[in-house]
Image 1 (cartoon, rainbow, N blue to C red):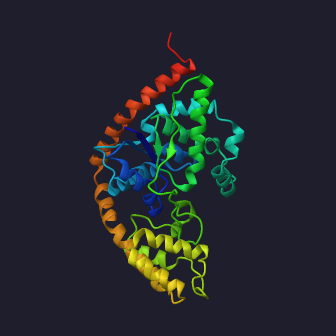
Image 2 (image 1 turned 45 degrees about the horizontal axis):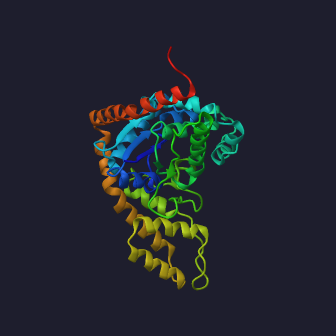
Length: 331
């Protein structure tokens, strides 16, 4: 049975981009593969969160993933820092990761551009820690979004480099996993780019958002003045709005607005109202489940304790074997 690994940083609440990206794919796989899901609290330290906020967001993310349908009876659900082996593998992989290649990371360049006063080593070596999260379980597949493709390529590079350097076939080359031809990239409400927490509260629809909040966010979504001739190509901001509609609305609804756009009769206000209502219908049961699980500390504690035990089974084995291959052995 193939091993699949997925994780998320506890930097805030889950949004639709998270759901239709890694979460949805993970839900589809958890009954057919050896699945491990973790909350990446080590990764979040690059932004220096307050200790109380870090603990609260870890708990919130766990509640939200459980509410989305992750099943601790069939998957290992754990907190990254509860698996110390990943930190040691991170150290070992740093020895075969080169500064030049890490500096070329698109994500690194973007982060230091946005926050030039916080260019820490953790940001630079972020792909190495991500590789450690994956390779510690010798995962074959990783559900990732479009923006994580380069990081996954780094992981494949380190796996190959380790194998070549030590003359072994130890680490597999993990591949991106999804159920379509292209990796999912959910656009934000600001008209460009992806849906994400770092782009501001108004850019993302969170799974915990109340109905009025969702309506206000969607109604503020960027549009243009409308098509001026039949069947003209949609600009990016409009294509993004249609992409969001396709995620939550019925095919008939989408086709209705496609036809309206093509014959130049579309009313964006009506379209946004429809998107907002369909988003609310989609989010409602998840939102109520989040509230229920968030108040159950015993359940969350039980889930992460059992998940850590499952994760350590493969983590300890992988690290022990990697140390022996490198030459780190007890006398």
